[in-house]
Image (cartoon, rainbow, N blue to C red; front, side):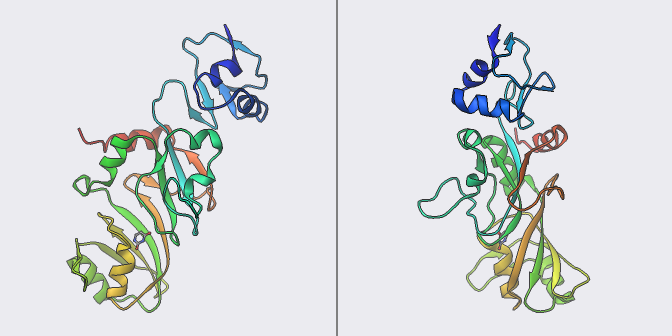
Length: 238
Ligand code: URA
């Protein structure tokens, strides 16, 4: 039998002091119930440990759903600007998490943070055909010609060839839903600028089977549920 704080600190993710704080804050679950005392003793074998709901015992990788707010970079570090990793507590920043797919600094919405490089690659590869949907608000009025141009695929002035994509008009004439299967730099902004309707607001709603949790506020995150993890694992390319 070993002390809980020792077992957790032994994972290398937290110092003993941090572990004690996590336990006292009620953020550690052992075998399904919340632990309160760093000195509780357990046998390591078969122990199911969770921190903030994320399993840290059996699973090799971490998967978090983040509601990216505007103003942060989709990167792991930057000399001058804040990145999405600055939204996470220290122990999670040290697990090699990175954003699987980028959103522009001024864009918002669903971002998957993981340290599973193979899965991120599968999700982002155009060959995997993982659709992403975005809510957009533009300067101007979206019309049927815009929808047809998206559906046909377009070639921009700078030579960028865009695959056929979806554009669905919403009740407000300046709002729509865009569905993309690729993710070139500033793609939606460039496609809509090409149509003479610059983007004013952009928010990613879905990525394959993942849907931005309506319970999350901008800047908030949560571990993927078991079901969500299973759904994205099915996309893994062998
Ligand atoms: N397309 C863009 O132009 N920006 C994003 O952040 C995502 C898609």
